[in-house]
Image 1 (cartoon, rainbow, N blue to C red):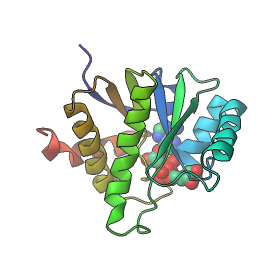
Image 2 (image 1 turned 90 degrees about the vertical axis):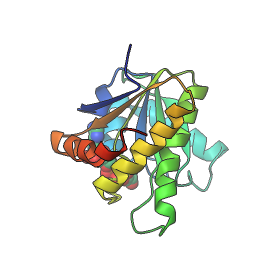
Image 3 (image 1 turned 180 degrees about the horizontal axis):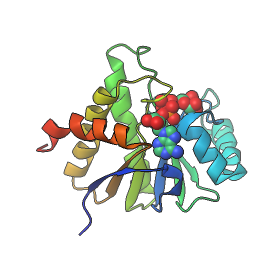
Image 4 (image 1 turned 120 degrees about the vertical axis):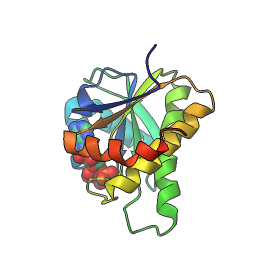
Length: 178
Ligand code: AR6
């Protein structure tokens, strides 16, 4: 049987899962980091769908912590779930719960789409400056809480390099009994 949580190193755009998560910004119009990589790999269809979502549902932009889905264009995944992580230092005490919401809301969107697996990048830990150790604990706790509610979905944490992966693994060591 597949483990509920798997930790990997690699380029998330190549993941063969139902949904990959994008660490987007509220404009949904693309950007750098993993967002840029996803739009490049998926192609123009993703941007078109993001434009429609903005027009129809979020004219002022997708709020931090929320998540929406598009198809994945040319990538192997079926869907991209776009979520907006907090900019570290911009939200005071709320940053932690906003980052946790990114994971929880993305997982709920994946379930609504009927997904049995989902791959997350380390949301907010690049351009948005969240300390990797803190973000690791928040991400792991949020996913674990969701899985403990009985939802059947395999969650991949995908790190761009082994160093980030090691930081994550060491940070969550004390949490594995959750
Ligand atoms: N696969 C997996 N992980 C990746 C990849 C990849 N291809 N590329 C980068 N990462 P970031 P944020 C890792 O900056 O901090 C964008 O401009 C990266 O090493 O992509 O949430 C958006 O449009 C890091 O660990 O996202 C927003 O404006 C993690 O992904 C802003 O950046 C997240 O880094 C969002 O900033």
